[in-house]
Amino acid sequence: MIVMEDIHKAFGSNRVLRGMNLNIETGTSMVIIGGSGTGKSVALKCILGLVTPDKGRILVDGQDASKGDRDAFLARFGMLFQGAALFDSLPVWQNVAFRLLRGSLKRPKAEAYEIAVEKLRRVGLKPDVAERFPAELSGGMQKRVGLARAIAADPEIIFFDEPTTGLDPIMSGVINELIREIVTEMGATAMTITHDMSSVRAIADNVAMLHDGVIQWTGPVAEMDHSGDPYLEQFINGRAEGPIEAVR
Amino acid sequence: MSSEGLSLNPLALLAALGRWAISAVAAVGRMAIFAFGAISHILRPPFYWREIGNAFLNIGWLSLPVVALTAIFTGGALALQIYAGGARFSAEAVVPQIVAIGMVRELGPVLVGLMIAARVTSSIAAEIATMKVTEQIDALVTLSTHPMKYLIAPRVLAGIVTVPLLVGIGDIVGIAGGYAVAVYSLDFNSATYLKNTVNFLESLDVISSLVKGCAFGLIATLMGCFYGMNSGRGAQGVGRATKGSVEAAAILILAANFLLTGVFFSV
Ligand SMILES: Nc1ncnc2c1ncn2[C@@H]1O[C@H](COP(=O)(O)OP(=O)(O)OP(=O)(O)O)[C@@H](O)[C@H]1O
Ligand SMILES: [Mg+2]
Image (cartoon, chains in turn brown, green):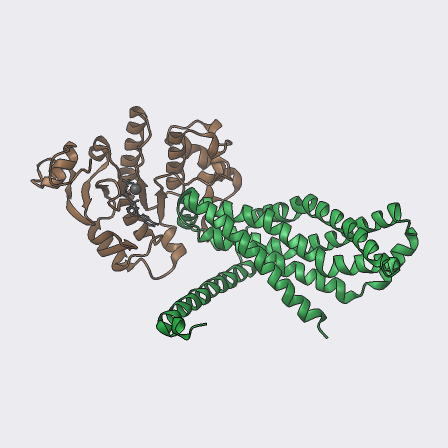
């Protein structure tokens, strides 16, 4: 279980997170929604320790995430970055199999290659992509390679930062199903950021909405449509009018 | 000078000076911590051999043409200058000795160091800054790979090892440039020129040259890595990091050269 307790984070005068509290049960799929620039990506990076919160505590299975063995901690995680963040000096398959080619999870090259090709297939990419370089791929393909890399070592906890942005509707469907499968079949804990409401319904067990640096609403996906929360309702219905100011 | 101007606001002046001093010391401190981190990662496993091989190739091998061209032209020009200058008091014969000492003690290390700052520091800074800006450094961390170990240690190691070699090659090529000019256009005797060069150089000259190479290699690669890792956001951040890294590397190389010359040659 992941617990975020009273997380604050500011960049200079820009106070992004202002006391965020959130619990994610093991083996469930949490989807975080919220306006652009509200700090969703920053929240994920806080859990991974890529951004250090100014205040607050993050517990993973009762352990303080900022203490203890970093390598062992990070080995449990997979992360898809919003911009894919592929290593452009390495071919696609070495990106996907990065963790399997070095460190504690190292295995023979041929085996790592096979796993990479298999993961690429799961995100809808053909084996011939494996030898190409990230810069030769389209944005949507890069995103999917990033996804394959996130799941390559079968992590227990996986973060997806906008996994379907930039994908066509069919491919979005494939990715939604994949995320669902990873949670139900492999029992992984998933935390997904998305702006795509059909993804939310396909992926989520629970939904949390981040607004003004705090979790405005959280609950099971089934209750999302009759939450009675004006912020959430405005957001999921995509209305310009409401409590959330849309600057025009 | 009116004492009023100063006495008006001595505290503000002092405060500004203090702030500047503190930020300068803090920057030096951050660089020192970074340098210790990098060096400690060079010594501790795991070693990423592929990365180390690539770094040696890029920093050492591929710098050879630039270094050789810089050295050969400098050595040639040096011979012409010493000949012309020496002729004023009929001391043309010192060309081999002064070319040798000038190249090995000063021009070889400094010019190679500066060329490495231009070629290697800038490319390291731009590459690492781009990786930082596109979250590749964050991705490395989440894949349980220490950026210090994977990106920085190999480059710094390659700098420390290959730059002295490049300096050695630069020294030889520079002397060869001087030799070519002297023998083919200034009518020096080839055998005498070589004999004078070899007899005149002392082992301390060569050692100082290589030690300078080591220091400059360390400075050039460290500055590239430091500015790259501390890059701001966006393309502008990458540009600033690159510019800052080359400036810092060039100035530190020249300052270190002055210090090392003092250490080796002040009696
Ligand atoms: N490293 C950083 N330095 C300074 N400011 C940052 C940094 N990272 C994020 N921010 C700021 O924090 C705020 C939240 O950024 P974040 O990337 O978390 O937004 P987001 O909710 O993921 O938005 P989107 O849906 O558009 O991806 C933004 O205002 C951003 O400018
Ligand atoms: Mg984001």
